[in-house]
Amino acid sequence: MTTPGEASPRIDVFRFIEAGNVCSGKVSIARLERLFDRLPETVDPAEAGTLDWQVRGLHDGLGHPALEIAVEGTFPLVCQRCLQPLSWPVAQRTVVLVARTPEALAELDDEVEQEVILGSNSLEVLALVEDELLLSLPFAPKHEVDCGGGA
Ligand SMILES: [Zn+2]
Image (cartoon, rainbow, N blue to C red; front, side, top):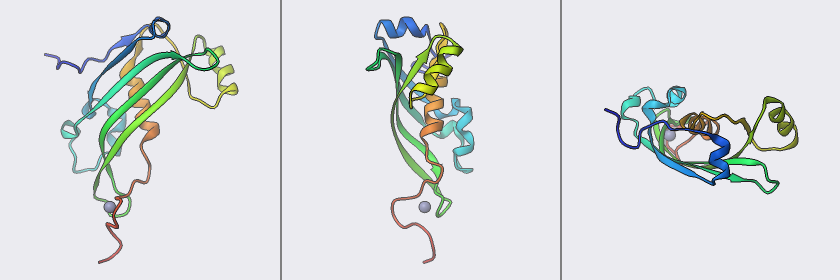
């Protein structure tokens, strides 16, 4: 009964990075519950569409294990000028460092500007994608054209 490409894969993150693996798929916005309060009231999450995502294992310039998380598609937000729905183009690409222990995470966090996450052997990929979207969607999106203020 699961839709192809809709699985929520889990990865053994350090093996994934060592192998330079890539995984990708599509995710329905309906599955990204932490983003529901960004949707316009008139948009049913079940009809909000899907986003393409990709996660790739790599090492940064200093040899730290890292994941590149990419998300693309369109996310319905609310225009903060006219309060009408706005199709926001998403084209996000972020590299996060992966720490092996909470101590290493705290240390890296002090050292680098980038986001650092704690690795595990069963990391839920879509949770990463959801995190990146939460960080990347603007809090005060506006239509490009002058959509409000009188007339
Ligand atoms: Zn507007």
